[in-house]
Length: 418
Image (tube, rainbow, N blue to C red; front, top):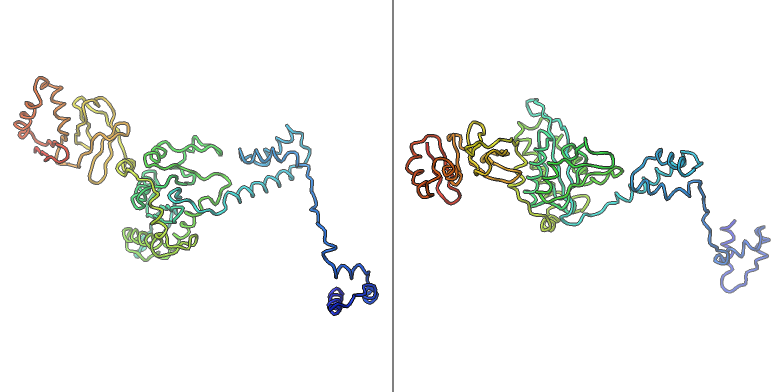
């Protein structure tokens, strides 16, 4: 009927006066209905939203504070209101409000944002990926993943474990690959990061060694908090991409080839494929982001990447490591020295301070730094001789000794006595 009224009204256009009463009789309706169709704005009025009141209204501010500050569960809040604030309502009302409030908090915290350049990176593992070579041998591997928040530039590496030393090695390699580190790195609550024996649900304690590593590297550790399931979304997206490696099951010859496959994937993701988040190839944005990265002292970080052992310095100012002796300055006699090594060098530390590094020299049983050797002689039976006399003694007599190596330092010739 309304469409018919509208049609009739349109037919009356052109300056002809509309007889509202006649039209009302024709359509068997009230003249006001005709008038409403002719003058709709005349009848517009603001609709007031219905106000709903809840028995929980007086307590909502208290509930909000408990959720935001301490993440209290609904049951705890209910008993607090009941015992301390004389709340007379049912638990279900509290539970429903707490759930809606937490959902809103999560939504606000996980709104997608673009991290500023050089500010944040995210780390994760693709754990226990089972793959087989062409001979049917099974490999259970993990993939270390780190992605820069702004450019989405990535570093991925195949590992055979997820130990703390492997984590340190992987991070150090990633920093070398990027050319530095971001100001903060986001981790989940992995045991190599968090000291679970000292941590609680709301108070996370970082592992002491990992904390020191982060300080030496120059980044701050951030851990995922409860009710923030999407804060590591960038790296978790990368973890899903690692499922591509399953296509190579039974397709590679050995672990070396599998590592190359992972390396090639890393290159493709950075230099050839567009990121769905930025719609750019990561290298394009990385060229700008890399300028904001923090420089890293890699030699210092590499000390964390080796199994370290503690040795006490003997009275002859030496430590014995794997059957070979190495000198240290005489002020460390009686103190404990930390020893670590890589493929080429052996490193001696005292309280994380590098004292000496020696090239690996298995042919020499005694390895000295020249200054150490002179100081050792001075504090023994040669304490009455000058440094010149000591040097003459060394040059004259040490050739007759077997298995001694003296390092004269940089830019000088090493003297090997065998």
